[in-house]
Length: 236
Ligand code: URA
Image 1: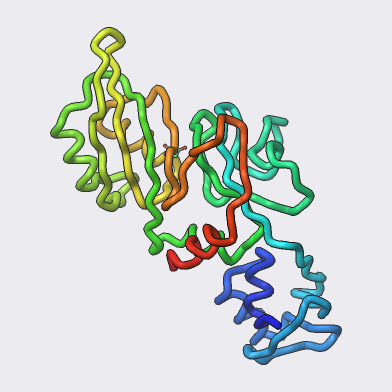
Image 2: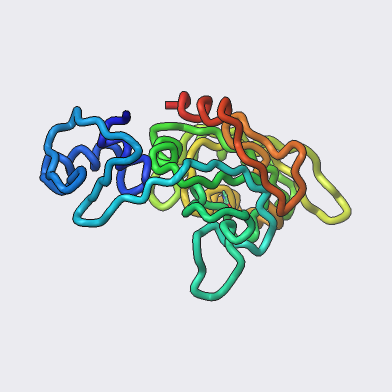
């Protein structure tokens, strides 16, 4: 038996808090009966409807994908480009947790567990993401300090981060930089480099929280273990 608001948020329809509002506003019914009590528990056979639509309750699935370049981080694409979901062999309605740019490679999680997705995507959660970036020019120490301390991006200061030069290739005049951020704004790493005049040539996400790409090649994926899912929940 699970609490009704948890079942609703798990199915990805809404956050836990929104699910509670839906219940209080009489938008949820169980086996045809409108339920307004937040404590109500349901089992796997109960038919739950939200706004008149029956909730599909699938087994929860969790994948860790090594995203290649030229793959879009969404469920479908109107331009017919390959998506991260296309790379995973499942019938479940999974979607990516956050995004990587079309040309960014590396680790991305996919799931049909709306509750976990909401937890990890919440701005206060500060999930660490580690990137390895190749940028044009010599990445000077002052700029590493500026980016690590936070810069203004679209009128909002970025949270403390770590930007550290790993190596510089004189021949091609490119720097390899290790980056750790906790936010997930659109094109954040590229825009941060750009703000100080560096063009990002390549970007790879090597870690998401405690998860890395060990054992996977580009385009490959694996399911998360139960223990890993529990650990992700505990980031709460
Ligand atoms: N930052 C970016 O600029 N791009 C990504 O894909 C991820 C983080």
